Length: 94
Image (cartoon, rainbow, N blue to C red; front, side, top):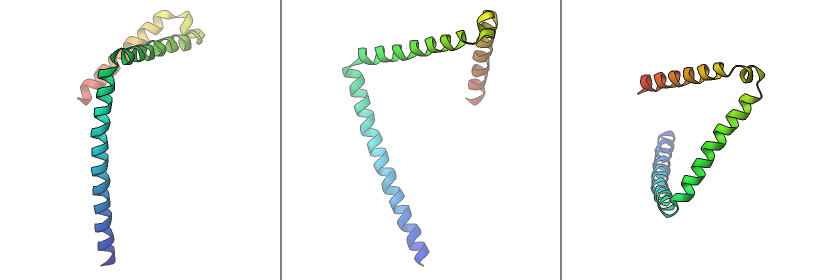
């Protein structure tokens, strides 16, 4: 009997936690959306910087690998193969 009461109490607590989580998620969504609508240029610039920094970082890493530096055609083939693989994987998972 005590175990059943304990299980019911745990289920009640989990339901409370789920409701708190969903209400916080909704509030955070509103904050995110309002911040983006208030400062769209800041978000665009930060996103652009992140993308460019990532590409530049990849370029610097590739430059440090002598085999890849001496074979740029291999980099091109590897990049295309990765894109084909990820595209096929995306298509299969959808």
